[in-house]
Image 1 (spheres, rainbow over the protein chains, first blue to last red):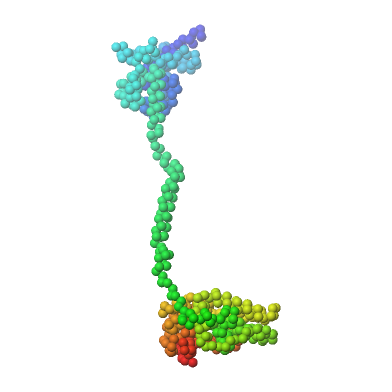
Image 2 (tube, helix red, strand yellow):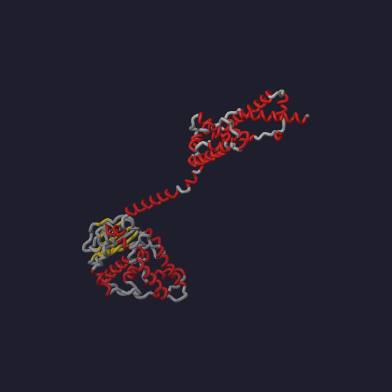
Length: 118
Length: 359
């Protein structure tokens, strides 16, 4: 019983994270992919997008906070209480069946579709 | 399927360069950002291009403090041209001063030649009758016979002591001190006095001495050696004679030791044929019989009005004898007295060399 309940919470958490990442704008998705997936430094990313390193750091910090709030909100919308949602965020990430790379690499279905499909 | 679709929609290189240069408008920039958020290849291309652009801009950027940090490296090579310029200036200055310095050859041309020594006619005819150096000189012998040794060496022309005079002085000194005077017996006999030959000998001797003084001292040395050889070997008188000779040389006034060539430069432009000095006062006669006097060796020659008859041919210093022992004292304290002899062998005397009266 307990086992099935944990699997349900992890499933809810995976769906909430995917929805939160997909709702971020294109610039934040580019920053998260460059920093967490490609391993670029703040200076390299800042020089590409034309901002200061401190600005980039603040943007990354705000993006992480926004994603966390969005995940909690998504978990609440899925029927979990606030406390249950906080406990779900404290779960071991290794237990989450979330492939962030695939999640970030998969573009939204509407992206460049107008150009690709003549 | 997703990857294949992404490869078809990759933006071109110009769009990526424009994205790096921040030159794209906001809608196109948002589309490229959305594509690069999902496309790893495009992100890699953009980051590599950005690194290349940064590396290309790095050498072009000049740090403002680079020249200040490396100033000592530039100064290492800065001394070479400065040293070359300094050496060139030194060479030019030396060349300039060397060009301004007069040529010694030109100076020699400007300087008038010294007046030739013109010997009088009697002196030119004298060599046939001139006595040998080893023989006693009549002039010195006569003066030694009628004057003291101090008077003999007082005059530069008569300074050379003859063996007879030295022998007499040595005999007096040795006789007074030890009672043994072998030099007196060794004195050669004095020849008969001939007044004409005496005058000719005097002129010739003085002219020869005027030409070269060292010869005179050589003659003195020869005479002293001859005197020494006449005395018995090992006798105390030899040392006494050598002491007397050395005392005569030491008591010689400074003006007597001056080169005779200087006395030949008389204001008349002629050579001096006879010179006499006493108490630093010098009287000289040129080849025409003109008389000149000077107060000291460094004073100018002054012409003396003719107060005698005929042509003066010889001048000599004459001092009163104070005793034969005090040689140096007589030379320094006796009043000067000069006498001149004309071509007729008449004698005029003077105390100062300027006012003359017949003897």
